Length: 217
Image (cartoon, rainbow, N blue to C red; front, side):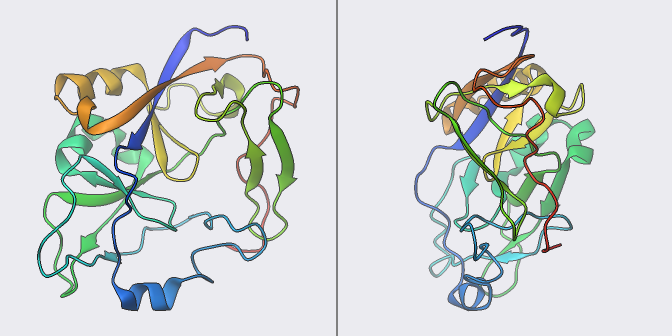
């Protein structure tokens, strides 16, 4: 791998258990609105984030970590103190939405969030690229070895502090990473370094777009 000078950090929810949505929401959204019928991946989100009604199990909210995830959607649940650590100048790089309870009241201290700019995490030899899904336009790419990888400098604008990688995971630059550590929030999530390279190590072209043309908008 060549030219690694910049490091981003992938932020992943520490809990493997996704937040529970209400039965009504799943009945309306699952699976046609959530998943592409052809490739099985979550649909890309191009507009505002919809309000998500969670099942609080009678007011007993079952999560406390700064970053959580919801199965079947392209965005994460972010605690307000983590969002504050991202910094006010980063709001332009995020789409934000509300998380509500069964009675349509906002769940305090949490918002839904998704980075606006998506970029592939690339892998090494043995990675697979099956091209773009003909239905949703998402790149069907499998980095090897899984769980590691890197970003390519040519695949996103210079200086963007927050990126979207994988489904809803965030990749943040060094400045935001250091804010998160200073705020004492690093222990509440998995943080994995992603170097930024000039040349791909997987044998594929540099310009593999995360999303391409699709029929669903």
